[in-house]
Length: 383
Image 1 (cartoon, one colour):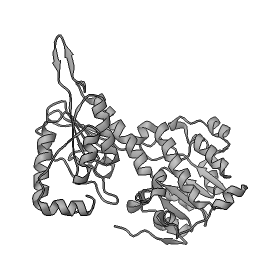
Image 2 (cartoon, rainbow, N blue to C red; image 1 turned 90 degrees about the vertical axis):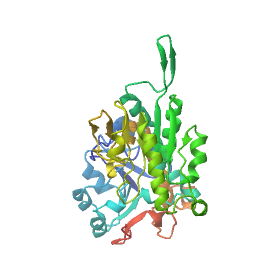
Image 3 (cartoon, helix red, strand yellow; image 1 turned 180 degrees about the vertical axis):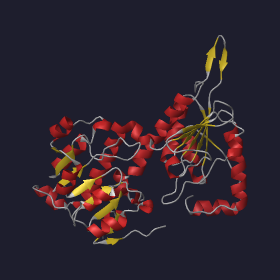
Image 4 (cartoon, one colour; image 1 turned 60 degrees about the vertical axis):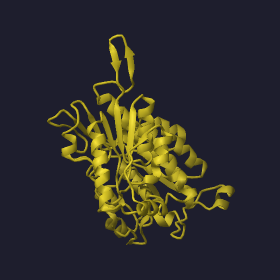
């Protein structure tokens, strides 16, 4: 059974789905790996490195698509590439399933497609396959470094003979994996960090990594509702939303650095910062919008570009931060895929050795959750 890797052509992308180290792991499991020439170049993995790991090098993407039984991707295939796939092949990657317009084409070709973003993250056996967490962790770290590079002053406090340099004030909006890493990184650089999230349950996490929680008053009823749902599914009252907006407006207006991380699968990113708030910020302040590729959390952002406002605030539309750490993000992503690929193997077969057979099982709690097309049908229910 062959697992194939092709070149990535998506804008701002430098990652590769399978690395030489992951190739070695797949070889140990009995798989053959075929890699299109140059597929790992942007992540600093050479064809020679893949060959040394046991992969064969194809002269073109088309050769990989024709020979591989499973195609490992970072982003989606093009319509032309999909048309080259024969029935029974498997495609695995981050496919933005709720926005993907190619699912019908995959189904028509008889291809089984798995979208890694749909992984049920509450399953303990799925944790080592969680591509969203592995990539968000690196993105949160890099976002702070990007902000530090753009900011015209230092992050930490300095005591000098010429005077005292105050520490930078950093505000993080959205405290998921990326947000928590951003808080920890900004604190390590010496900044004063505040954070806000719609889930009051993450307050302890914020404080555990050195951040100050931007508290919003809650009624007893809301506290119980948030507690009962773990903070994820509760619907705040209109008054709570107004109170949160006031707290966030005040914090952002006084901030030197703001990093926003909020995204909703299948929907446009929620608007967290409006022009009225940006107009109050100091000249030289920096906003990193990590949700720019899905519409952005910040009014006036442009994905992949830096916008300078009239009052001197730079809004950076961070289109694909993990790709800026392509070598490491590819390594983690490839490990996630290898762990997912093991769900296709029979344990006894692995012990016995020999050529593995991919077992597609829609009753498997992980495979079934990730499959968006199978047996000529689109399985995903659009939101």
